[in-house]
Image (cartoon, rainbow, N blue to C red; front, top):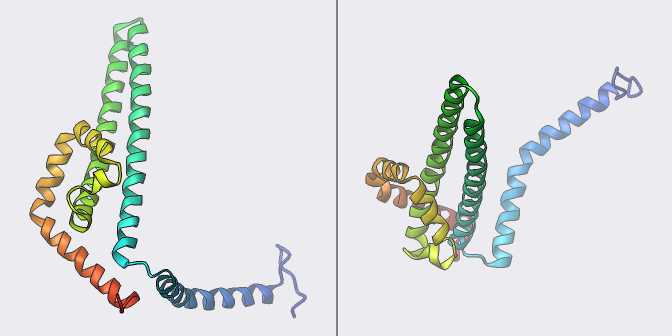
Length: 188
């Protein structure tokens, strides 16, 4: 009966009803989201490329923020490790501290390299969509240059790994943009 209660105080049938309702909502959610996106696009008449560019710029901003946080964290950690090394009383503790600092530096370099790889891919995509001067237009050129200068090896590796595929990546992005336009903004 509907009045039966389980250990947690909810009726078993009420829980089953909620489960059924949630499963229906999960099936309907993508359709509702698509309708809402098409309605928002037609109301605001936003060009799909502008929406994609805005999203990519947002991701670039996030990664530049992550880089700034990582750089600040590394600077503080490095200074603390230098203080620990300088105040070490034995050769063994000094060596252990130097090894720890080296491990931390390697970790920092790997993190920055990951950021460079992602940002470089976004940089290439935005150059294809907005032109070579996109970073200057959006006020992030100095931050990008600082990121690239800190990890030039990662930059070379990301270009080497993806340089031959840059046009393929750009063509793929252009194709997806055309498909997006056709689906959500056929009149544009």
